[in-house]
Length: 184
Image 1: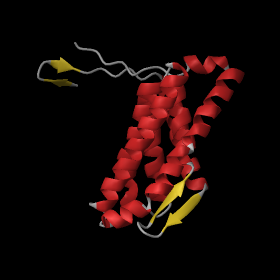
Image 2 (image 1 turned 135 degrees about the vertical axis):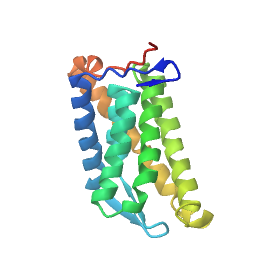
Image 3 (image 1 turned 60 degrees about the horizontal axis):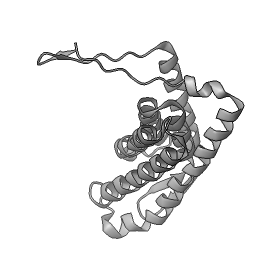
């Protein structure tokens, strides 16, 4: 794809495409598995952030962003929360991106920082989106704040799962590959 003399090349190996597809499915299942309804916004809380944090930490920001955003949005679409799918795509995608970018291959401090920053970004996006676009107002969006913080707090289990899987399967560190952007 060329634009104004610049070319962007995205090298996606079969392994990366496969990891992304399986990760999207994993996130969609985790988001759908446990749903706790929130009356104030007509949304729900879920356990999907566990998979989102695991995937982004294991496979990096590109796969993390796509899997978290698309997987959670698919769960919204299939679960009857169609109007939330665009906000979910952006909010959860940003979580996957930030967790992967700040935490992928950077050790425990980076993983924890990624989880905290990514989680707070998701909570902030939902708050702003629900208060404005979805018409819940500040009070309605605020009613969901504590639950959203607890929800993203579950990401600690994604970090723990990553550590356990990596210890049992050290090759995990070599599965994720960064998307390559080159100037032509």
